Every structure is written in structure tokens, then in C-alpha cells.
Image (tube, rainbow, N blue to C red; front, side):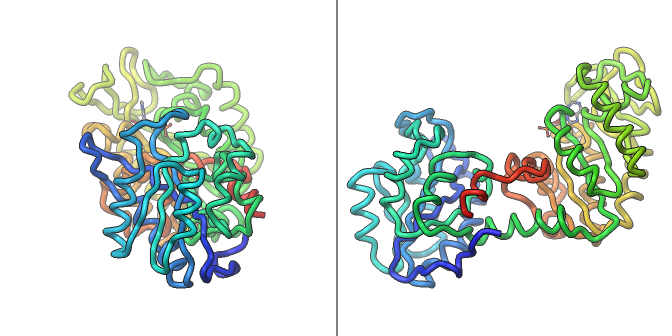
Length: 390
Ligand code: AMP
């Protein structure tokens, strides 16, 4: 594990913190959800308490290397100031003399938010000269942006090689939760994977197979497996070029004595539309219909598998949960995960949204703030942002 915040000498130091302030803004540039800013508060407050001067750097949106007025970080900085109840300053760039002078002028109790990192192409290119320019704004470095830790960007993997570096409290919470699940899971360990594309999740399945006791598959990605087993799936989403690979996964499961659960029945419709007529079909799906959610028998099967679990990881919805007619499977799984009493980790934007919609977030052990980063951890990869922390 990388160094922790408490391993760094913070007093009177400029603490350059990479945070995830990629918040949604409305057309009047008001922050419409400050969840990401709130998640970074413990680290910022801990630095202030230790007498450090936080200099925060973040990206917002996709300005693609140009200054885009509507993507400035000032609204996020203002929200942070309200939440902290102490001064938060801003500057018009993230490198250069204005930023460096502002960082050196910070008084005790004050924070500085540097301008959007992605106004420079050099950030996403991981340019070492840009990393060196950023590093001039701090004496030590802290990474608290788990959501960006899978990117080898200058602020994520360049700056920590130039300054004494540690992980922030949010980063630590994320890494601890995934470490526990992946390396010391209490058993039985059940993984639930869903979503649209099997191609996105195959590396995760292959890595998790060796670790889990039961693998539950739902969402459109289940149909590629069902086709491999000889089922008819109508017009459901299937990745034909991955049917053979799905067969290999099923064979690997059999030889390793792992249980892989697939849907037994399906909520189907003729069209991918919220108001199309839904019907339940057991086994095969009739021609002209597509599977858009798991059916009631499958819900029962998955609930039973989750009941005795001691560790659960969930990534991806069981159906088109955004549409009322096809959200029951995902909601039932959310409730079953929440009620299981297991150590539960939920990752990925859609499963987190489903957990929020179902009102079960408080009953989960860990809800990840990073969709892409959490998937890469589940794939068994080392995140560039974590590797750079040493
Ligand atoms: P992913 O980004 O791969 O995790 O997929 C999430 C998306 O998969 C959500 O927007 C769901 O609506 C969609 N999805 C889940 N199940 C199905 C299905 N059976 N058919 C089509 N889309 C689905």
C-alpha cells in the first residue's frame, strides 16, 4: 500500500491534492450534485487540521486542451468554500507564475483551487514537463481522486514522482475496500456482473473467476452466454464474436468447480422503449422479442445465492433499469445485496445509480466513486495513479 496522509509532514507545507471535482453543472453554471466535492472533504479538512495549505487540482468535463469558459472550476471552488466554511481561492490557470504565487501566498486555513487541468493537452498526454510545472505549486502531493486513478495523466502519475507523495483518505477507503474483497474475502464470495456489453466485463470475469465462489450474470451480457448454451434469445443484444470466449469462461467455471448463474427467465419486449408491452418468457426468448430484464424465477435464484454470502461485489445492472418496466431485476438485486449482511462493494455508475434509486446506499459497506478505476481493479490491474505513489 502507498504512504498515508499521516506519513507526510504537512505543517506549513503546500499540499498539492489531486481531487475529483468533475461535478455536473447546469446552464447557469450551478453545481447540480456536489457529491464528489463532499467525498473530498475529509482529506481537505485533515490537511487543514494538520496545518497544511491545500492546493487542489482537478479536471472538469472534456475541454480537450482548450480554455472553455463553461468548464472553469470556480463553481466547484465556491461550493467547496460553502461546505468548508473557510476561504477557497481560485486562479485562472493550473500552472505558471499566478498559480505558484497564489500557492505561496496561502494563509493558514485557506485553500486554493487551480484551474481545470484539461485546459492543457499536456495533462491527458502525461507530459513530464507539465507535471514539473504543476509540481511547483506544492511541497508534497496527495492523490484523493480515485475516479481518475486509472488514467496515466500528468497530475495523476507524473507529479507524485516529483514530490513526497501519499494517498488521501478517500483513495485509501477505496483501495482498502477493493483489497479486502479481492485478497481477503470472507466466504462465500459472490460477484454480480451485469450491464450491456460482455466485451467490457470479460477481463473482470476472467480475473474474478479464480477468486469467487459464485458468479451471477445479468443484463444484456447474459445473452452472449445463453446463445453459447444453445438458447434462442430473439433480438436481444448479443456479441456474436464473443460467443466462443463465453464458452471458454463456462468451461473454466466447470473445471474450477465454480457456480456461474445465468438468467432462467426474461422480461421481454418487441422494442427498446419504455412503453413497449412487457412479457415474461422462461428459457428461450421468442423471435421478434428482446430480453430487457431478468424474470421472477431468476430474481428468486439470485436472491438465494446472495442470502448466504459473506462478501459481495456488484457491478452492472440486471436489465434496462432506467425504464420502469425493466427495473425490477436490478432493484431486487439491490435489496438482496443490502439485506445480505455481507461485506458489500458496489462499483460502476449504473449500479451506484440503481442503489441510490432503490434507497439502499446506507446499507452497503462501500459504494465506489470510480466506475472505470473500480473495473480496472476488478480486472486485476495496478492503477497508474496508485503505482506512481510508490
Ligand atoms: P454497462 O455500461 O455495460 O454497465 O451497461 C449499462 C447499461 O446496460 C444500462 O444503461 C442498461 O440499460 C443496459 N442494459 C442492461 N441490461 C440490458 C438489456 N437486457 N438490454 C439492453 N440494455 C441493457
